[in-house]
Length: 163
Length: 123
Length: 282
Image (cartoon, rainbow over all chains, first blue to last red; front, side, top):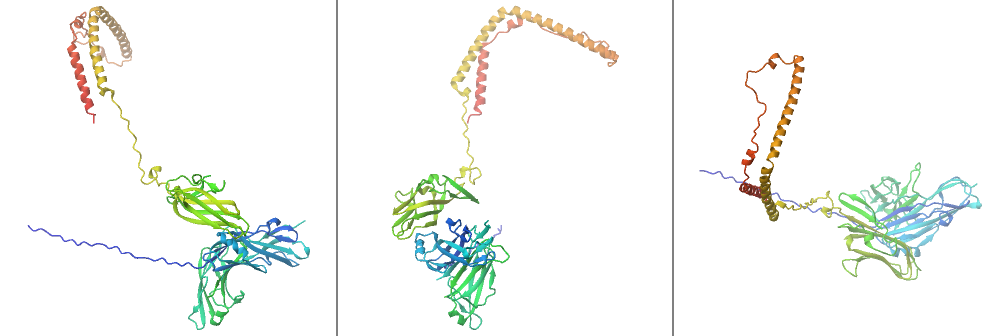
């Protein structure tokens, strides 16, 4: 008696594996984030001020830097209104910026080492992390005249400059 | 009677920002003779801003001539935009910064009056 | 002070505690983190204002004791304010998913000259509600608990009870035997009276029933419901409506109770019950 012989070929599937790389680089990066909106108080008819004692709100801007010592924060407080009613007289502007909050205790030294000129304040961001800066701005209408009624808008320039 | 004044420095209810990389861009020769090029990446994390002005400046932040697809780029919220910058070879010694600055449309009432500018330093 | 809010992402619950330092510079973590099995702390965020003289030295420690290693800290952050002006600091420190049970008492410690105002410390955490599958029937791997079936004891299986039943059965059978023996002698007249009473009642009942039937038949006949053949007389012999046996109690007297039979009957009952019970025995 003949027997049929069945020959089966066994095919095994091989699992091919590939390594898929994920590349990335950590490079210096600076992000400017407006944190708190500012409001001008009107302590007197000819004065607009963000100081809390004058009924205003200090604006706050946050700087996030990834790598230390790559950037400097250059903050320029307003020197003119971007939007306002017609003003017949000149406006005297004063302003300053200071460290408000830090993510590293060492950032408190930014205030000590800051450079001020005109309406601009420079902070050397020597530590990676987040730093909050608050700005003071004050506008005085010339000739002790009252500010006309209407909407007033002023712009703060927050710059992050690579060193 | 004192007139009421509506005074706004800027309004911000949330964190928003834009980033501009690399920090130290390098110009390399382009396909054109005596013209250098570099590429920057703009990432917009601001919901209230869609337009950014690109500029090349010297040390004093005086604008210098350069060529790019646009001067003002549109970047929607969470959008990345590649910006190619071309300058002449002789400008390389004067150019120090490549900056991007947020811009508002005139007809839109801006909700955020912070003008943020980030400058990368040319290596 | 308990956890504040949490959100769901698939099966993992993420949450954030309230300010752990709202009541002071020391806090107990059982009041801060929810008591969940498998809970992991993922991040610590803190903020405070350091008030100090810029020229003095001051170091602030924000830390949690390690419940697994006495004397050590599972989390510790150091802020050195020495030689710096005071300021408000905000720090967010990722924690490598450390079990919440390892977080012991937390505290803010100040070394040097100065103080800390308005401390604010928040712990971010995550946990799997089905870390223990038995915690909810909705969890994968939940095994319904098997209820305990109480063992019911059949009193009839008790040998003492069965013996008592047998004893009573035997006693009863003897009592019944005695009573009936007495009842047969004294109660024969009663039986006779009963029979006569039954006869009278039966006759009375039969009369009343017959009267009712007759009245009904007459009414139906008047209505011509039944045919004439219905009321025709039959040629069959007399039909006796009732038959009874009157033996003046002699039948009862001849019946003698057999105690042996009773015992056999009881024994058979007992065996029968045993056989039936054996079917249910395991």
